[in-house]
Image 1: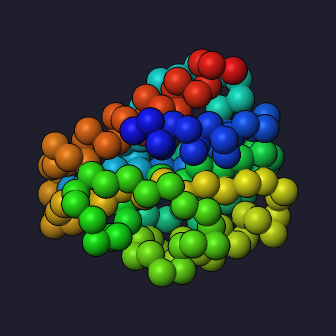
Image 2 (image 1 turned 90 degrees about the vertical axis):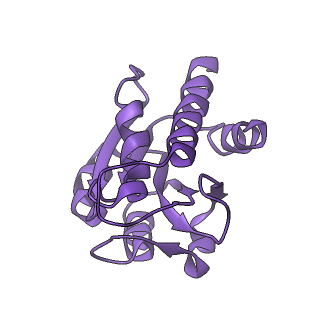
Length: 161
């Protein structure tokens, strides 16, 4: 947890405008992790933060994100990294090729590449290892805990500035 905060704080050090893009499917249990984080971020009132709920087609929001012109974009999604459920990965866009993201219409790498070509910004990926991707609307305790931790870390970083 402290490592996440330290590393994310470094990456957001020069942030003027932050976009949080929550990705996933609310109908596939833990795949909703990115959406849960985004919903928590929506509760924060901070002039340098804007939240986007990308669901299963985050590429549909690229126009709105580009119009917002963030200096930093945080993409939160369920990621298979062969770790225990709820494990958190903080990655740069160039690291996403070997990672399995879930439930997107287009590969997340295409969305990232398009955003990077369109605006000068830093993109940060936060992945959460799911426990179950079966159809349903039940989030595992491990993933719920991780989504709360991520939202709390981002909230703390914004309050410290």
